[in-house]
Image (tube, rainbow, N blue to C red):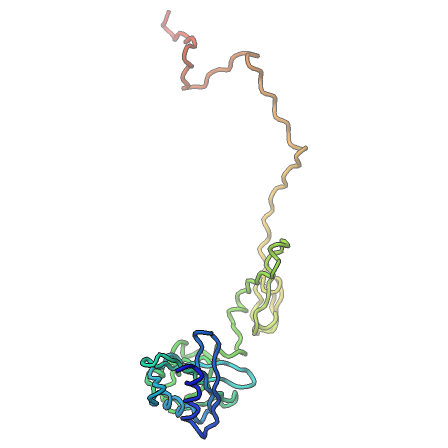
Length: 261
């Protein structure tokens, strides 16, 4: 079945529920995408699995997307091992009450996916029964994949910056920038701003002083260098004494040692 046929088939199975079918991008890897209301989420997953023509018997993954004021999109990708086609199911839950029915009874493998989505986005899956931490320590507060969550590591460690187009040709260096979601210096509690994040010494309690630059001695100008002494002409002056331990050249007279006549 083509992606268009997969989408139309699931919409027909869910009637009279208002479901919308479309096709994702990806050209040859495009997938049928069906948006369903939250109340029909579990029914849509079960229909895609049990229908003989769809036969989506494998849950590839389940996660969510933060759409800010519009809420959260819960997304599940199903695959048919027999028919070799995929299906992307989506439902949108409101931000103030992000709750959707669990599909663990349809696909037991969804248990880990729903635990991770609950942990990272704060979405509740009714009927799961075991939404305990999966990746984060129990004392962790907040949901890291929500777009309003501030990445504390980006405040504690300066953002390295990025090369702008044409900077290398113009001879420019890296420009320190602040990543999205990170507050300006002085807005993050009482933690001192590290040197380099937005200038040394900024923040509520001052920043870490920048390391002083190492001073190097100035190189003399080409005309200020001392002139080298001239090399002696061949044959001029006395012959230099041979160094200790050096062997005399072949054919040169050897000086007599003590006791020799």
